[in-house]
Structure formats: C-alpha cells, structure tokens
Amino acid sequence: MQVEFVNPFVLGTCSVFSTMLGCELARGQLSLKQGLVPEFEVSGLIGLSGRCQGMIVVSLGRETAIKAAEIMLGDRPAELNADVCDAVGEIANMIAGAAKAQLEEYQLSISLPTVICGRNHSVNFPSSSTPFVLPFESAIGPVCIEVGMEPKAGA
Amino acid sequence: MGNKVLVVDDSGTMRKIVIRALNAVGFSDTVEAGDGVDALEMFKNSSIDIVLTDWNMPNKSGVDLAREIRALGSTVPIFMITTESEKGRVMEAIQAGVTDYLMKPFTQEVLQQKLEKYSLA
Picture (cartoon, helix red, strand yellow):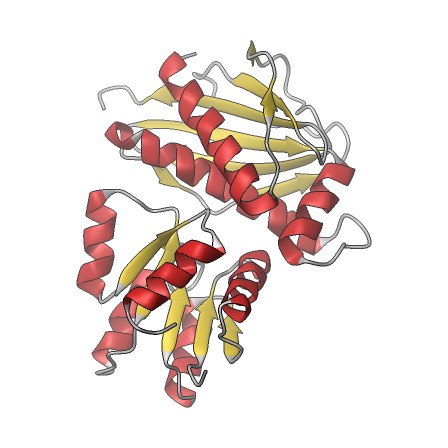
C-alpha cells in the first residue's frame, strides 16, 4: 500500500459527503483489505488508469444507499432501484474525481462508474495492488471506501 | 427569467441536482439530455440560451458537444460541470469552446456565482 494515496481519498470522500449529502463523516481505522467481499451490499466501482492503475469501491448498506439517493434526488426511492444505483455511481465518480485532482502527478483518468448490488458479491482488485479500507460513520449510516492502486511499471 | 438552460449528464441524479440548483437561483426553463448526441439534437431543434454539461458521457462527450455547438456558429455560454481538473484537460475544454468550469461536487452558491460572472443570473 502506498500511503500517499490515502489522504486524497479521505479528503475526497469527506468533501463529497459534506457538499452533496450534507453529512459530516467520522473516519474509522485504516486497514488492509481482507478477502474479496466488500463490507456492504451496494458497491460503486470506478477504475483508475494513468501512471498508476487501480480501482476504488464505495461500499454502502442498502438503507444508507437509499438515504443518499433520497438526499440527492429530493424524493425517497421506494427500493434499491436504478435511481439509487445511479446516485451511488455518481458519489463514486465524484470521490474518484476529487482524489484524482490531488494525485495530479499520476495523470489519472477515471472510468464511468459501475454499481453492483447484492449480498456477498466479490470485487477483484488488480492483482499487483494491496487494497486498503477506509471506514466512515455518517448520519445516514456507515460507508467504506476501498482503494487498490499501484504505480505502473516504467511509468 | 427568459433563459432556457440545457442540462446534459448521463446521470439522472446529477441532472436533477443541477436543475434543482438552477430553479433555486431563478432558472425555471430547463431541458435535459443524457448524452452529447441527444443534447446536440435538442440544441439544433430548440432555442437554447445556456448549456451546462458533464464531460465524461457515453456516445458523445461534453467537450465534443461544446466543439460541435461552436462549429454551428453559436456563442451561447457553455459551462462544464465535471471532475476533470488537470490543467491540460481544462485547456482542452476551453479550446473546444467551453466558457467556464464547475468542479463536482459543487454548491448552489458556486453555480450562482458562475452564472452571475457572465451576467446570466
């Protein structure tokens, strides 16, 4: 794990939750990712490429994801539907974008977001990376950010 | 206010957020598109006064949309709302004809300031 990747994702996550959701986050203990299953049921995935490559996963519980979508949309979705997935994808996009802006030396590009819903789904990070997990608590529920990034060989 | 605003983003959530912010600062006449292809068709077929667009979208990007709007001879203000902040990317957008930038995540106050800067609000 490269520690210089941690703070940009902490700051990006706090900024997005504060600006878009009106939630201040309390950060938990940083740890290395164990296994392939994200912490919660809903995962927003963004790929990163450039002078390093990797992926960020924004992991939210079902109710937290619905509450986040409610705040962003102005109406509460009745269930975990396409609107909720769209909102989670946009949260992941903004967190990745905010972190990318602070990692300018890596000339990163970010992919369009993908959202996966369902219990016990697996996410494979690039095999060369050592993903870390950043847990947060918020007024709408717990959130985990998982980041796996490694500089490209020769970059 | 008579300004008709075209809001372009592949995320329906972001379109709602942008339109809500526009409504709050006095812009009630809005239309929306989910990518640059649909946006360009709307632009050609109706009288649009301001464009707010995302950059990264399927089918046609926001920067290509800006380039094609300028190729039509239009001088309407085009604002890019995006996570792309690197100098090279900003220059690329400006060269394509983008008027100004808003970084995601943005606040209603920042949107208002940008519109006021160009005497639009």
